[in-house]
Length: 193
Image (cartoon, rainbow, N blue to C red; front, side, top):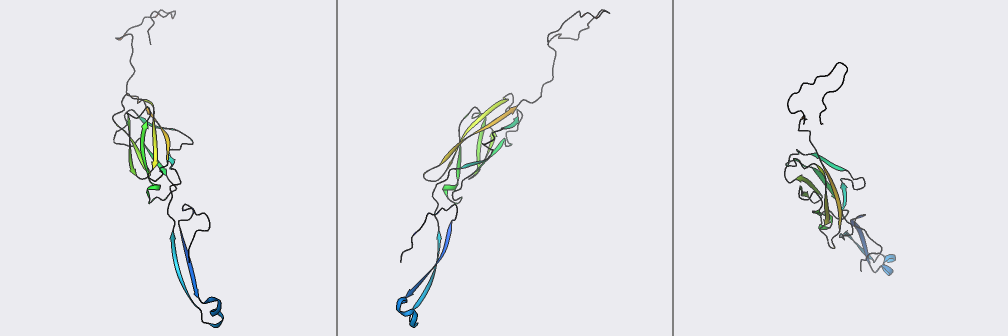
């Protein structure tokens, strides 16, 4: 006999099947006379994965984009933000595992992406961010390792905040200054600010 697939199968919905096949000898004539014999065989069928799903960004949300904020004094050893993706294909195969790649963006020279496992990466500052406050972006390609390869592009926004590390000072007068005011309240001197 031949086992064949009778309908469409999808590994992401059901990854394996267990079937039992029963065979008979001389069934047509031997069943009524007791001359027939039968045997059972159990088959475990594992569905092989096709690379039919692209990776999906889980964090940060691409539906509600936001800016990952750090100050200009952010420690280069600390994570700026993390990226988490998933792939509906088999996670134990290359089809369900991904690679991250920075493709450009205004922050490509300031930030580096380090992959920590097949679905997660962390973003770090390459160097100190002192006096580099502003809004930056990274254009990131996330691709699975399957064949044919499937990928998505994402944009990660990073906002480097100015840190209040300078005290205010007077431009004029440079030195302490005494102002004399007449009793009628007329200003005798104006200063630039």
